[in-house]
Amino acid sequence: MSKKYSQSISSETETEAMKISRASQRPKQTKEQTKLIAQGIEKGIAQYKKQQKVKQRQQDKHRKQTIKKIEQPASIENEFKNNNSRLPWILLAMTWSSNLIYLAINELL
Image (cartoon, rainbow, N blue to C red):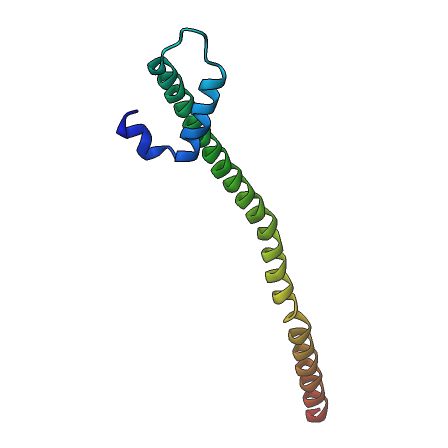
């Protein structure tokens, strides 16, 4: 096997690929042919693992985007509630000040 494949593929994958290639070995098949089949299987397994990693990353991105979309309206709602909590105090202050102005005008007259 080449160094390129042995560095990127784990020993477990190599063992599994060799088992599969020996299990599907034909009569009069040479050891070299069996090794080539094992290398092909290893390459297929490595490619499958890469595809699964890409799928997993895409699923994670989608999940994070979904979470952001869910959290975003909640944060806007919280800001609205915070701004609304000031409204009663503003109205109370306006009422008191208008009452004081009314009383002051009545005493002057």
